[in-house]
Every structure is written in C-alpha cells, then in structure tokens.
Length: 85
Image 1 (cartoon, rainbow, N blue to C red):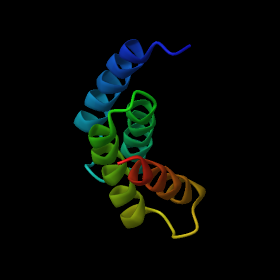
Image 2: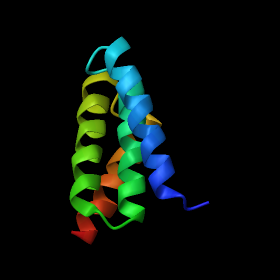
Image 3: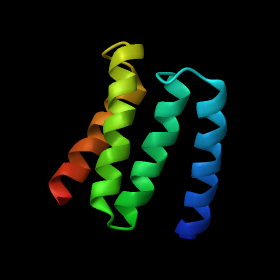
C-alpha cells in the first residue's frame, strides 16, 4: 500500500513493546529490525536501513543456525542495502 509513515509508526511501536518484554538478542527483534530495514530501503533512507539490518544480522548470527532461512534473508537484504550506499 506504500503507506510508509504509518508502517514505520507501527513497526516502532511493535519494537518498543518487544524490547520491553524480550531479551535484547531475541530472534523476534531481528524480524522487526529486518522489516524496518526493508521499509527504509524502499524509502531510500539507506543509513537507517543499514543500521536496522546490521542489528537483525547480529541477532540472527548469535541466535540462529548459519543455514536458517531468516539469517540468509537478512544477509541478502544487507547486500541490497550495501549496494545502494
């Protein structure tokens, strides 16, 4: 729907709630960081996209097996953002 500002507001609220209830390195946080990175990528805010995807990758590398689909997807997104910068 491309309503990025509304989406960002809800991602931020969801992240805030999860950060209060979950450990800092919980894989659910990585999912939100990844989604926010993709949103920032779509809106060409590459530095914010990179910040979020780095957090997602760090959590996933610590908590998920190296072949986990989420980790692989986060790394792909990281590369897409890196290529745009």
